[in-house]
Image (spheres, one colour):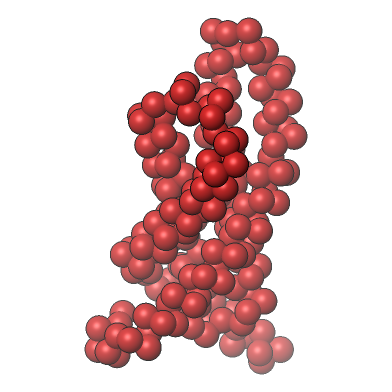
Length: 174
């Protein structure tokens, strides 16, 4: 009971503490670039992008990256406002990282469906029912993939933050 009260008090203190925006966006950028490279490099090396690349342009690629980056940035900032990577238990960090990753996956999928699927259904031969079916079946997949990626990225983030704590002087930490 005393442990629960102490954990609850620490949680309230952690939630109320403002996170460092630079830290959140640095981790989000690292996670986004790492994810994009982990997906695109093998796909490009295997020749799997040869059919897709001619139909894409720079604006579409940048828009997709920015959308993913903003979603990951927002969830990373939110995550750092709820956990303390230096002192929280690995189980708590894993649960939060998985939850935030799942949320990011779902939000990114919804963005793709709204941004690309709905306009394609309105002006093209792509039926609205097909878009709804893709969204309904894609949501659990996006949540699972997002949770796995979130846990992996959370582990990387903890390692990077601990390295940063060791190489920076205590007076520079917030």
